[in-house]
Image 1 (cartoon, rainbow, N blue to C red):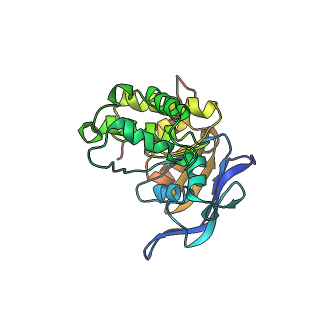
Image 2 (image 1 turned 90 degrees about the vertical axis):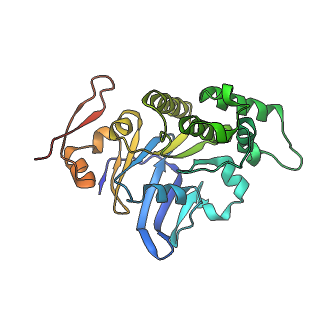
Image 3 (image 1 turned 180 degrees about the vertical axis):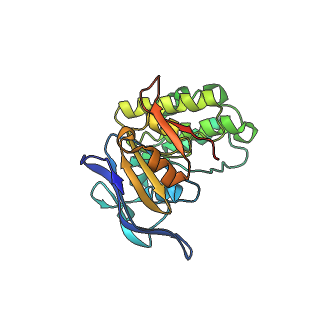
Length: 267
């Protein structure tokens, strides 16, 4: 494994975890730490364990061995609401209740902050309004989620996660269904949130987007970590060929000066 990561402390990490669905093992003895304040992007070929790792880091999937640590304690030991106030998750697929309006769906993102003594507040209202403004979904607030296009629906789900106002954001393929302009807008937003202090972990398929936006990349293959570190330190032509089976050239992006992967023609 190539490791270009530094020794910064971490709030979230997996230690020697085995991840499985029923009897099918996806990853075994897997360890990874998410650097605090990083924009970490997980890349890798289909079915390599990217989304499975993200589900484990969010406590949506319990490892059959090993443990996920949040703020120095096993994540399974926290109350669900406490985890939800710290870690926000955008899963790969989400289903909204039938007949729910966008504003009502986004309001559910504030549930972890509410209690018997603290019901809906001006703070909740402001958080939802800010999330809609950031994702350009304000004009959709009165619409039924069922009536939205795939791209609109995806932006609404991102807004709901943002409304949680968690210091850690886990996003599984957040650019799915988005056209290129909205992809860049969303990744710019993630970059801005990261600059403001949030730690972000995202699964992306586009290697060039990963290299341009990430401060830290985790490359996975076959349920294992193939490389982990800053894009410029780990992204090589050999790594891309080893992980993706893709011969390529890597040059400096003329705009961002980050690694730019150019596939070679086969044959």
